[in-house]
Image (cartoon, rainbow, N blue to C red):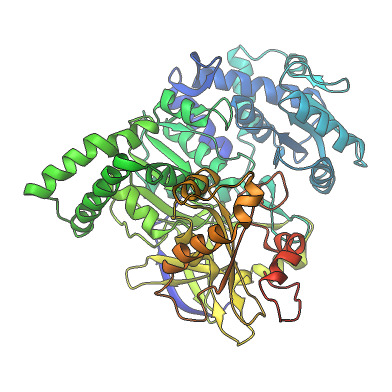
Length: 613
């Protein structure tokens, strides 16, 4: 039984439901309205109605059954976000399958692990390259796996998408639709809907089993908590392999929000302006990039941006206190909005009502900046194991620096060691085939141990202070939470990524991936000439100058929290180079192993210690 020292609950009841039930409710309500939107060229967008989605989902479900798929079989999806992802997902669920998303960035051996561990019998892949990866992974798996390719040009051995759909038979009569509906509604709330493999920073991934009601209840709870409305438009670009975007898309589809997909991540900003969404879910990394882009202005433009930001900050003080700026401040804000803020809003389409942020901690100063310019970010919290949302700020209850109050039907507790505990209908069924791992995090009375450290204030707002396993314990026995420090530093225009290190060391140090363009301009302004990125980040004057600027931001910290040394790195942490998870979290253990010598150089005179991160 879990020991809870602090506690807050939202006792608003949430009806039990299934994802297939929500799907059919949306189809009945919205019929000919636009459900999905895709780019067919840089200039042209094709709309797909709810009725058309139903027909295609029926084809997927019929083809799965014709292929011999039984209820409870596993259907995997290896694809970037696109309409086919949703069609296969809903088609699999309506046919009674467990849907297994696979991150497109995984290597063939990693894909093989997921397919084998889940027992997948069919995997849908989007591009020819991903189809080839799926075929390689399937060849190494002990079970027979069919690979279906969405796009033409897939290698031999993959079944073409249209050829697969042709197996479905008739889907056009009232009898066909009635039969499909009957089969889809066989799903029960406690049936497993999906198995999602954690992108964990250490060890092999675990398959998180989420039931229909885990996710469907979270859809309902989030809809009750946030102002997401029929007629809104959203942009689906975070990986659907992760539960954050996937649950958001279930919610949007059910509510009547049009879901648009970008052509690619490279065209994201251009496509965003074209679609002009009203509500967008994203992760802090995107907001950091937008902020740094705004603040990297130079010369007279930089002075204008700094002036506008200062005006907005004063206006934010008033608005957070429930007032509006008046008189001369209101006039200055209107000018700042016209000259600066409107350009930022236009860059994200010009119609945005609010962002929703999750997947990692958002620096309070960053949140305050966006709030001050009229682009509020509603920060929330959750994990794969909680379907995912447990807490979120909303327009009525909004507090910067917190992840908000619990959503309906959710209890939040703080254990005696500060760990955040969650109980509610969104908490997972368990880890697939891992009863011991399940028992480690899920108590008999239903409390899930999140692995995060946090605090609840008197009004029920939850603040996340760090990951339990990321807490640095220095050689002097002092505990240092790295995330708040890293998040603050990432608001500096010279910083792209930052990682604080120092576990079992005498002091903390800092690894920084600079914003290379901004750093080059910074060096040019000081007459520092170098021939390459490598020579730039190793130049003594550059290192000393950046260290001086960044460490000045940390004067408010206790002495044991402040880093003593800094290293600038020439390579960004990415999913592709194995230094970040697909959900954009730094793999600290991998970073420590790969940069061991560089880290040790920051502690000359100390014994080498591979646990520095």
